Length: 296
Image 1 (tube, rainbow, N blue to C red):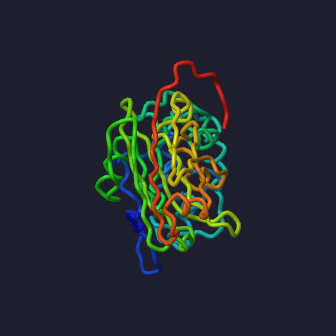
Image 2: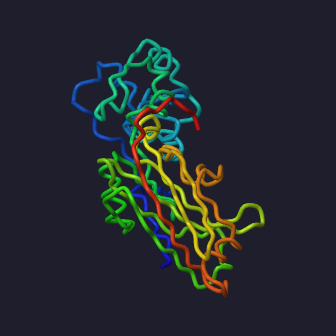
């Protein structure tokens, strides 16, 4: 059974020259007395980092929004020019702020200019959607992503630690980077993504199956999985550790960390006539009892 790619549209809106962008309302009618408030961009409400821009009347905004408002101050509509607010940039050096993922559990506090670097690799940051069939900008915690995969991408959901899938394609010559299938398994109270697709390694068409863990890398190392495909007296077996969905689908695929089946071998598994692809992939997930630390 073949699966078409499902495109997930982003909720973000683009802006054109005709758009009028107004500053967001302030938190109160009183002048900001808190340094953190002063460092908040009035347009996008994100924290501002150098270069921080200002108009001739002293209104500030971040460099990203400067381009969005077409170099006009959103507060007084004067031309922004290239004036830097060096005093505010210097003041920011004395500020310590909590990680923006604090509501997700991160307890850390960082100097203002160190915060973005931490947040980019924070263990509590949201996970990106693991669906590989289209560019999807959705992120969130694991449970929200499971719901998103089920409702928006119509991904098959299964419970259990063993599986048996059959993949059929009438034209086995069509393997030009075609993503076929994603299946999600609920096993040991955790979620795993099984990918199966066709692509090319150089000029050689191949099929590949691999598992990703919906969680962080450290916890993913507590699990192992095996994949097996065979037919007509032949068999291939793969055993490995599921990669975290922190690692993108393409990264896992391109380092060949999974069960790879050459097309000629896949057709041998499919039947003597070799005219139609018929692959049966079976697998099992289990938890490691003693798990020494390892790196991928």
